Length: 393
Image (cartoon, rainbow, N blue to C red; front, top):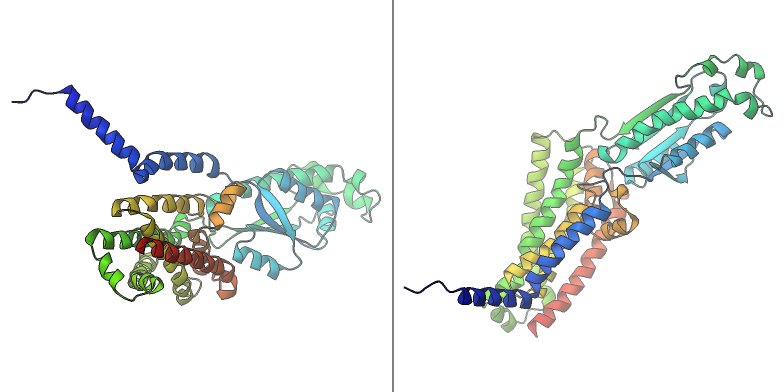
């Protein structure tokens, strides 16, 4: 019986380390994945987002309204990005996701406030992602009470040159009360009850398609090479584009089957409201599915074997999951992370899916998120074709 040898054991350990260092794919996984996770979770993820894009419809300009708007900025939850002139324009901005809040100040607001008429102030919020807007909505109620009460107590000083009557000011009972002098009305649009499933379940379609489509096709070319069937493709007159499209088309059908399963589950199990056209959603899913399949094929031309192909998918799926706005509020990410997220197809498809299902968006509203996916698809297809030629050589 052979005795246990520490020398042989060390030789095997040394051999494994040498193989590990020579395998660039494994080495990248060992170093790259932890580093990527630390960077994304440490720098990019923020569950308490600030500087959320906000639009203002102002029908009244006074020291009261200007200080309230400035106070919203000072809370650091709101960032006033634009002034709009009509409710229809504000509605469009909310529907397309360009802003998360629209503040509507009615005409004669200040006069009604000074007279003690308890005027209404409307703040509309895109509540499709409750975690993005919840803290901001909590802060604005306290802000309204403090700002307007402060100005009302000093109204004689601020309004001595205005057209308001001193009698209106001095007899206003709100000067001696601590309650809010305005009727702040908050409309949480699209998800008023802040149900988490309404935000998560529609987004799962994009996450599932990203994970499965990229992973399935990532092994396509490497599998051909490992099984020895690549030589058969080399012997045919098929062009690189024909091979790539031929490999993609069957999986597009698979992608649509997955999308339909998710939609059925969303309706039957979670009662997700389908406010928009489901056929439009399925139509918009085509370039998204194709883009993820193209990513998988491009990775398969870079990898040396199937295991390395699957490893590569992590470097695409992990940023897509964390920087798309699926798990964490997109608006809460730093600017550099938002730039990266905007380059990922999942970010735009999440907006399309939630926009159609929860907001009832049409083609005009989703087009700003469709064309980036088409552009990404074109770029990845060109890269894949170029790499495929090099693989054949």
